[in-house]
Image (cartoon, rainbow, N blue to C red; front, top):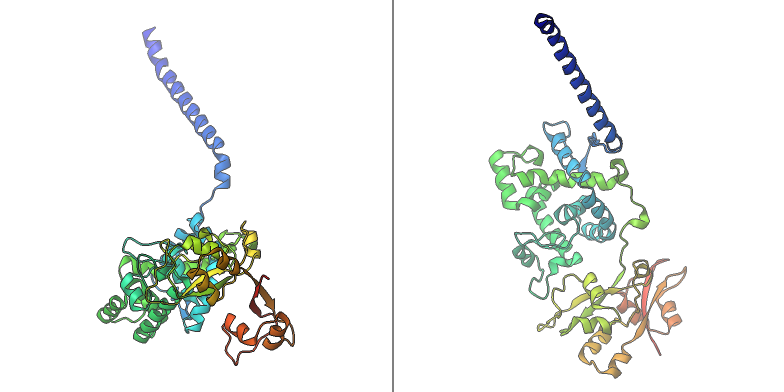
Amino acid sequence: MLKKLKNILPGVLLFVLLALIVEFLNYSTSGVAEGNTFNQNYKVLPVPLPDSLTFAGELVPMNHLGIRENLEQEMLVNIYWQSQTMLELKRANRYFPEIARILKKNGIPDDFKYLAMAESGFAFKTSPAGAAGFWQILKPTAIANGLEVGKDVDERYNLEKSTEAACKYFKQAYDEFHNWTLVAASYNMGMAGIAKAVAFQKQDNYYDLGLNTETSRYIYRVLALKELLTNPQKFGFYVKSSELYPLIPTLKVPVDSSIKNLADFALSMHVNYRILKILNPWLLSSELPNPEKETFMISLPKKDAVFIDLGETIVFNDTTASNVNKCLADTSAKTQSQCSSKIVVHFVKPNETISTIAKKYNVTPEQIRSWNSLADTSSLKVNDEVILFKDNK
């Protein structure tokens, strides 16, 4: 009997083992089935890389060792950081036109607008090193390039002025390197750092230089952003035009007096403090001391339409320089009531001149030229916008 049982026992054990294996496989299959919907709908794929690419008209050597891998790294980082890249896509619609205009005026290639995006993501922030604004400019560099930096005013947050300062740097760097890619790399590493690397390594091409980790990645990040924004749908970003952040048309108001209370100033201009700060992020505090009587250009909304889209209601006030300064100097109710007038935006029609428009609105040609910063020799084109200020009487 024992001998018979001994002969059967291996078969029983083998059966039990097979049963356990079958049960395990059934459990595993069931687990995969439960997660099958996730597997079908979530896929992480490599990104398509271009066969050719340029920066500022200079060719990227895509067939050189390591170039494609370096570019792919930055493409993957930006494409799969979807929330940040989506925000940058939306913000670019608002800020790129002004940046591109200033770059073109200064003879800087259009591709340099992607440096601002790479630096800040179009967020008004300050780095741990103290660099600030869209262009992430350090305080000494800002002051050296004519920007005011203090506790009440920091023009690194002024889009127009900071872009002009960046252009000054780009011009100086190009005079040194005669190569736009090296100019862009030097914006991250500094002219001295790039010059030292070029001299030591005896290479004058960014893609042939061994640099620190941050600068080695910098140009590739700029290239990745250029590729992404040039064709976002290619990489899975679908944004309707109506979903992009719109341009905010503004008027520049010259102010050469101190403003003790910016909230009161905003109300005198018939906007609120919050909107004043949105349009003028370079105003850091609640006042604008101006002992030197400098002329600061404060931005105020130009049209109602865009703010209606944003859920705002704007009532315009007269924003001529003389009227603004009168309102600042005298806060009496009588003066404040006289400060109210309306802004007229006139679109030039065929055969209209400054003189005929002035006659139509009962103002002088000189006033129109002053309000719109037009020289005596300036002429108007059809559909040009002409701003006029009319008393509400």
